Amino acid sequence: MLRDEDLKAQLHRVLAAAEQLLPKVVDTLDWNQSWAANWRSYSFAGYLEAINDLDPVNLDDLLGIDKQKKILEDNTRQFVRGFPANNALLWGTRGTGKSTLVRALLNEYGDQGLRVIQVDKDDLVNLADIFAAIKGETYRFIILCDDLSFEPGESSYKVLKSALDGAVYAAPENVRFYVTSNRRHLLPEYETDNLGFKMVNNELHAGEGVEEKTSLSDRFGLWVPFHLFSQEQYLELVGQLVKKHALEYQLDLMLDDELYAAALKWSHEKSKRCGRTALQFSRYWVGQQLLKQR
Image (cartoon, rainbow, N blue to C red; front, side, top):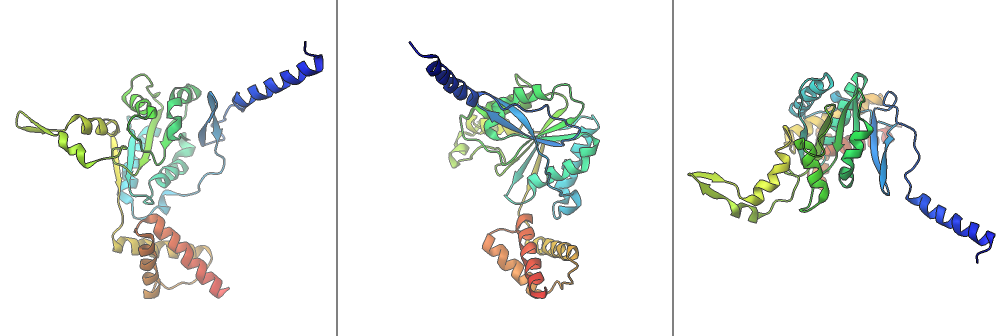
């Protein structure tokens, strides 16, 4: 028979182990104070964690993607004002400004009631809980899934598909999905996918494999492509960013051949011409000039 001290010690160990499985105790999120949140999974449950340090990027800071900005900003304005609006898939090369554009839209329309909840791929299975957590709120919520892609058979794929399709996990009226991905259809594409095409009544129809791969992306009302810049676009952006950073530090810089040659060399080493590469180079170049002068 256990002594009282042994029983207490054993109960303490059991309670300590059980406590590790319980969700973290958090206060109800005040959306009036917090414009963005992450969904945090914890054992068998999860909670919304406020993001207090937002990226200060503005729409005017995003250069070279004017067409993409207009498409997504128009859709976001419709959504914020309670008009019909679409879910959006932002796809294309890394570093071209997809997720940064969503953050800039939050800064632009946060004071008009826009809010963003970032959800990782593995947490999409908790969409029903996320919807329940924001049920009845007067704010307009963008569910942001950043850098999303799936492998065949993943359970979160079907959950997102259902939410977009208005089925079992139908999203509330005040929720839209903005998804960024390097893959246009969110799934890997193989050369063998094209073998399933067939002729029906003299029309070419995709096979079942292709149909399945496009069935998720088809549920997004907007497809917004982001591509690499041409050399001319890249150098123009470099010049604008260098002038912007130089102005912040009251630095007088010339946009000369030396700068542009260095910018091209930088892009060759990075193997891509995009907004991220231009931003990284501008920081490097202006920082180097400041070190030389000061």
